[in-house]
Image 1 (tube, rainbow, N blue to C red):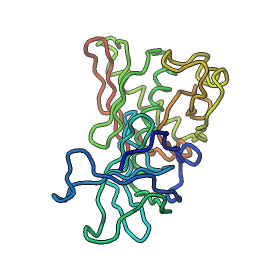
Image 2 (image 1 turned 120 degrees about the vertical axis):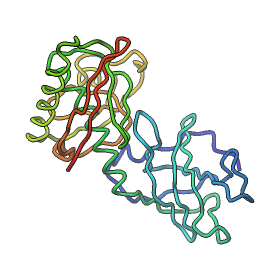
Image 3 (image 1 turned 45 degrees about the vertical axis):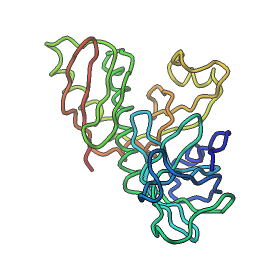
Image 4 (image 1 turned 120 degrees about the horizontal axis):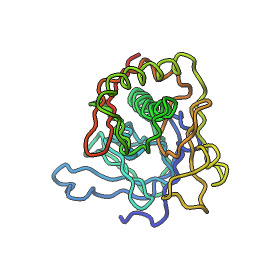
Length: 257
């Protein structure tokens, strides 16, 4: 069955901490290159989802989609605004999902919590870089458990790398210890720009309503990911390495309870 033309409603934009929610099935079909007779994965498309698809440096949520059948969600991806939940039916020979059917989505809570903490830690480092006077444009972020890092377009002098590493870690943990609510919401363009220090990246259209994440009094930034409710939920942050290569400063980090 073909995927719908319209975009999937991202329900986690409305409630980022919802771990269970209803939805309706729009389509169920074979994942590309995965024939059903060979036990291949299926792709389920819903009218709305609380599953975060992999993107923005954040891994996908996993969990289950439940009705009379149980669909085990192993990966989630988005294409042209349509979110595809990839996985397998728990009972390969049993009942499957059908178009129009009402289902319940259930997120793996531990995985979502870890992903949100790692993703939030990356954004907090962005604020710490600015607080230390290192005004460099954030680039690539990788917020997976196996070696999370953030990159910045700019260079920290070699003789300052070790001091910067120490200062970043200290600044981050001081902010975490103080705590602050994390604001995540969609705003009109001009208001969003003010929350982000007066300007937004050029790829964001002026007629859009960007989703902004803001950690306490720190400047906000546009982001479609999931985050903690309070900075203290990140836990202890350790800057494990900082290095410069080809005009990019890479800051690697880890978190612990």
